[in-house]
Image 1 (tube, rainbow, N blue to C red):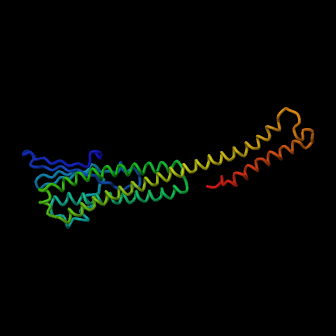
Image 2: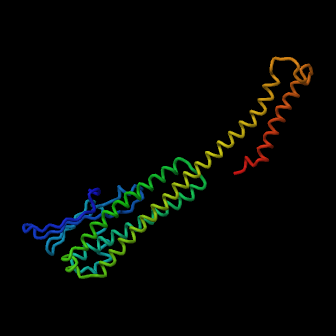
Image 3: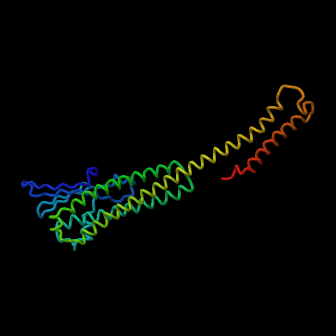
Length: 265
């Protein structure tokens, strides 16, 4: 199962003749599912003496064929088969991380134009993918490091260049996953800042609208009191004059707020 990979076990009991058990994860590309956790495929290697057994959970996996096509001529030992397969999986991780980077770039562009619910869901899904990738890469690093520290394995491998390539890709994917997690965090922060800014603008608009309406309402309320001596009480144009005064009060409040730069961003 993908959730148990990667791992390594080295048995030294006589009855199993120093058997090495190694499991690593590979990620395959598909357009059907964007969730990376569903695209992990574990590969199990059992190295016993000079015999190597390779088990794949997914029958559709093409990692072995890709390995033969790319490294067939350079493979000269069972140890090199195992390590070249690990190297190829690191390249697949790098390609997957580059695709996640494209998603992050697109989310960053969309964040400037919109803060819709769908975009927030995409941010959450991308963050989930990066978390799963980071966990798998870190766990695989532990297993690969233990494998490269196995003196007997390295001695039989006798290929320092291959060891160097595996270590280099290991460092590279670690750097990439950390950089892309930081980039996604910045996009998430951008979403939060934009949403907060939009909320502030809305509250500012509602507050200014309330002040304008309140100034007009105050005039209307005072003019509508059931007392004598109100201006234009007996005039046939009193209602129109009252409406004009309330509108004037609202306009004056608007100009006052504008003069105080209350409507500026």
